[in-house]
Structures are given as C-alpha cells and as structure tokens.
Image 1 (cartoon, one colour):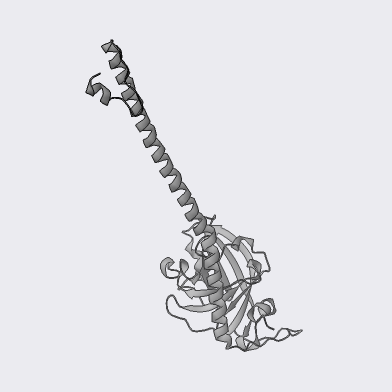
Image 2 (cartoon, rainbow, N blue to C red):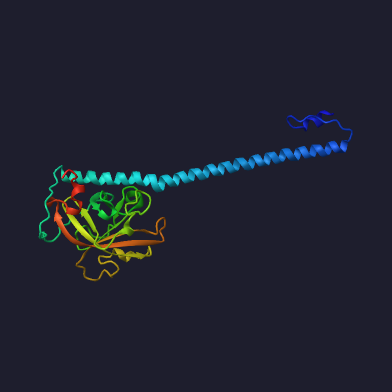
Length: 278
C-alpha cells in the first residue's frame, strides 16, 4: 500500500490489502465522510453545551435579580428606615395609651422641602407586613432614587400633611420592590407617614389603573383639573402594572384621617414597630 493511502486511515484502522483500486478509493471516500461527520457532530455538541450554559447563567441571573437581590435590597431599605427613625427618636420614643377621644392637634404641620435625592420621611404600611417600613426620598429619578433608594416623591406634588396631593412612586418588582403588594390594599387600610416633626395617618380609599400618559393623577386633586379648589389632603401611590411590565400604572389613593406631632408618640398601629422594647 502506498504512503498516501495509509495516511487516509484513521487511528486504529488497519490497512487492507486489495487488488481492486476502485474499491480502495471508495473506502477512502467513505472514511473521509465519516471523519467529516464526526467533526460536524462535535461542533454542534460544543455549540449546544454553550447555549445550555448560557441559559443556566441567564436563569441564575434572573433568580438573583427577581428574588434573592430583592430580599437583600428590601431588607437594606427596611434597615435604613429603622435607622432614620432611631435618629429622629434620639433613643426616646414616647408610647402613650390612645385616648378615648382622639386629640385634635389642629392644622397639620408641614416639614420643609429637602433637596433632590434626600430622605425626608418614613412610610409604614401594616397591610404590607408588620415590620414594613421604608424611607421616602425626594424625586423620582430612576438612577438617583427609584432604582437605588426605594420610594420617591414627585417634586411637583405636595408634602405630607399639606392640602393637595402628596404623590410617591416605587417599583413593584426588582430593586427591593417597595410597592410589591400595592394591589393588596383594602379600603380602610392605614398608611402612616412619619417625618421628623409628625406622624400622618392616611386611610386607603380606592384604586385605579391608568395609561402611563395619565399624569393628571398628580394634580392637587387627582384626575380633576388643577383649577379646582382643593381642601383634601391626599396620598397617591403609583407603580407599574402589570408586574414586570410598564404597560399601565396602578394608582392607590388615600386621604388624611389624622395627624399627631412626633413628641406625642406613634399611632397605635405602628407603636410596637417604632419602639419594639415598649
């Protein structure tokens, strides 16, 4: 057998003696096709393994972003709110028994406006969990507030306790999902806003779904021309709807029921959370 014929054989393939040159050529062609097929199968296998690995990595990233990261960031936001409350409390939170007749403290005091991306309030929502507390920041920039800090106030709206519309925004999914359970609010639920000076108790009234273009939910009287006279003190909470989409906005409206100065202590609904030691 010639050297060129031997070179066409694969590993472990012994040369065959044959007096038929045509048969030898046919066998060589078959061997070449078999080797080419094995090479193609190997390439497809490598690509398939790479695609499977990429899919697993994407799945792990989504699990991190949508679950584990939310838990971690959410807990960080809760701790930030607790630290802010402790700073305002200065280690001394008065806890009083609720009077049989609620005290009328007069016209609510309104704290001064803070700078962009600065914290100024804490939101407590018992419906979202007995330990739910989140810091409220100035502004709704995604990079400065919503994606990094949590709940943000629309700068063009009013402040807690002020006549008009105190409107805030937060994510329902990812970035700690502060408003994850906004759709679970029920009529009569309390949403309590605490500033350095006072506690404001808002009561949930109703909810609606609007297009992203419906910016009139931020009017002093939501959905009503801002030329109308306003006497109510409203809290508007906004987020995206449905989950994992920005197709619509879910809007939750509450009205101020009462307020009390910080030195009077927290409302009964959050007294144990504000001062767990009693």
